[in-house]
Length: 431
Picture 1 (tube, rainbow, N blue to C red):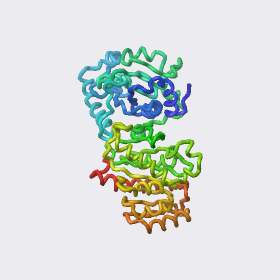
Picture 2: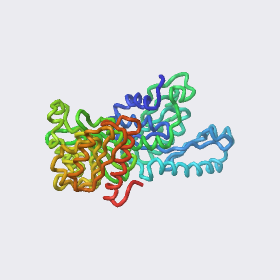
Picture 3: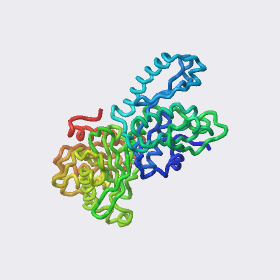
Picture 4: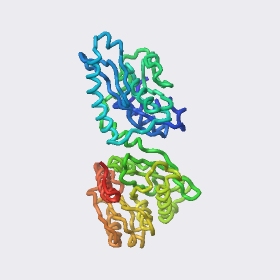
């Protein structure tokens, strides 16, 4: 079996672990290369993602030769064959281990941005790597999960030699691997793209790994959504998509990832059911869409109703696109609204009508410089606003901001606006 890259490997491995979906699972990726694979597994299982931070113990006379490995919580694996063959003394092992434990702690802090690891106590820990050669680091990761109280340990890897389970002994309760080729010599031979994963890529995977599928109530209806809450989030932004779009909008998701990287949570959800969206009147019913936003915001403030673990006191912002921006402005202007900031991308604020004058939340209007009709509508609407507001033009950009760099500019403007106004609500910003 040949994998295109680690994402492809993760998607194939996800099929092997599908029977674990619905159980109390935490997915732990071995950095660096195992984390992109683990991210796909976590997404398929709708499970939290974390790193299993381990370090190889290189032999004193040849650093590339593993004489063992260490993990968090004191986990330790020693390759006795290498130690005996190299006549390595215990004090030499201790010296290497001391230095590697310092590096292990540094990487754990960097990967988690100083936050705590996801708890595995009483849960099933699924440890994922892009492949196994010697198995020392995987064994250390398994032992670390045991030390942290995991009830069950599953080791899932994309590729491994035929005898890989024998090498790992009883360190895992279950072993999963889609490919164990007879001609195995190195993990990289089974990947077309086996570029080294960077620390920055690990962090990005972990940020995305804080996402989970949710169901947002709207009266008797239930709307699909995706909630992402980074550790120590400074606020949460609810997205309102435009006509003909959904929570899967690639433009909104691009902006959401920028906000997540800045320490802000996001909720992308469908404003209408599939059946409702077939009626074009619903798509442009700003009052209906605004009501859905208001209900979603209330749901976020009552985590016991469906978003457990979410801080109900997080300040909330709205990001609206096209007609969705009118709904965002309308909902933010409702009496008693707790919305602390609004950003409109290529929006139709005119559709919010007289409610613009009652809006109190600081509002940023972002419009493409080449989107002339919408630009004029935003200029006119701004004259009705009484709240702190700005209009930012993205030079040369059309309505969908498809020009090179245009959407990145939108993401930066939105990020800075929300960090300023939402983080200020909590007395600080993302660290």
